[in-house]
Every structure is written in C-alpha cells, then in structure tokens.
Image (cartoon, rainbow, N blue to C red):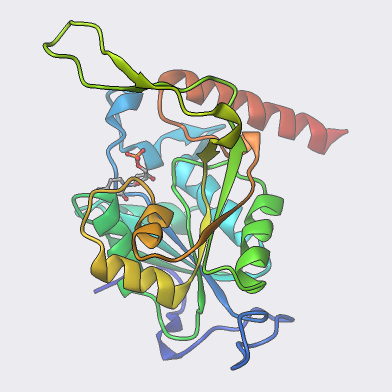
Length: 268
Ligand code: C5P
C-alpha cells in the first residue's frame, strides 16, 4: 500500500525522544503526524514538473515542506501524498535529501482531488498519532513557530486549528457573469476586519478529522472547512507572511527572495 522511505512506524506509535506519550486524559502530550498532500499538478504555475517537485533555491518545494514539518520537535511522522503514479519518484527524491533522522517519513500515492489525497494520507497513519497536521506542499516556507503554535492550540483542547492572517485587500462577493467576457455583478462586501486568509498547517484532533473525511462529501478547499460542516468549532491562531502558497510564477520569485534573506541571516 505504502512506499516507505524510512523504517516503517507500522508497528505502533513512534516516540520522539524527549516527548511525552499520549495520555488518556487529553491531548497535552499526544504524538503528532503531518500529512502533506503533494499530488497536484500545479497548472497555475505554468508548464513543467508537478508543483511540489519544482526547485526553490535548488531544492524541491516538497523537500522544503517536509523539512518545515520535521523542524517541529513534536512531529514524529510525516506522510507525503505523492502523485498517483509518482510515489516511487517522490520516495527517491526524499531519499536524496537530508532530513532529520528523528522523523519517520512515509510516501503514499494520492488521488484525483486534494480531499481524496488527504484521505489517502490519513488512511496510511499508524495508530498512536492523535494529533494530525495537514500541510500543503505548496507552502514550503512556513516557519516552525507557526507549526508549533498550531500544535499547541490542539494540545490545549481545540479540535481544529487554522493559522490565518488578516486581509490587506477588500473582498467582494460576486455573482458569476451572465456570459463569458461580461462584467461580474458584486452582490456583497464582507466586513474586512472579520475576514482571515487561511494557511497551513491546519491542526486537528485525529478522530475529528477522520470523521469529517468520512462524512463530508461537499467540495471544500481546506480540511478545516470539512470539520466546520460536522458542527465542530474551528479556531484561528496567527499565521505568518512566509507561509504563503506558491501558486503563480510571481510566488516563485518571492519564495526565492525569502530563501535568499534566510541564507543571509544565517551568515550574519
Ligand atoms: O491546487 P491547490 O494549490 O489548492 O493544491 C493544494 C495542495 O493540494 C497542493 O500541495 C497539491 O499538491 C495538493 N493536491 C493533492 N492532490 C490533488 C490535488 C492537489 O495532493 N489531486
């Protein structure tokens, strides 16, 4: 079923040295796994390799995303969801790059939609990881402090947590144009101060996320949206400007600039 690039954690929960085990009284010490859906083609970025395999600073975006999750000492397992026919290629790619030894990595084939890919990643999780992060490979530069803030909020009892930022732009809700090329009529202007632009990793109590994926069939663009539909409360923690999604060619330029600044800061 799965393509394993590290010793399989299938025998039971893997403990990160120094982290407490799951307790029966809550999620304060629960083991954390991260699922990275990376099966999209990323057509908005233009022609070329699947988006997750594009290089940033000479390193594939997916490797940055795996390192970003593994940078948190709480994360003991990362499940990478590869393009349906590309699990072998992704496994070789991860094997060719340095990743923290203390983190187990699993590679599984993905599906036709993001939702399906995340579900396949969840199905591959061994028992014992009671907190699950879902992180888009397309957000390779999320800082570890943001990852840890999401984990902490789930450990503190929230069933679903999203990192998010206030919006700079005013947002309009529109009605689709009557015909192609016609202007789109505006139907509402939501109050900007109450809007948030949501990022990843999104963090969940595992049972809550699994239930959402089993019951919600609507087409949604994020996992927290599925949990909302089950009636559970989702909460927001502060996101980070460097957790932006690499979607269009200009985002690649910005990502390279962020990496260049980080390299400079490492030197000085
Ligand atoms: O298309 P979008 O940018 O919203 O994709 C978000 C994330 O979902 C990306 O990391 C992409 O690789 C992943 N995805 C997936 N399986 C799909 C489609 C998208 O894992 N079938």
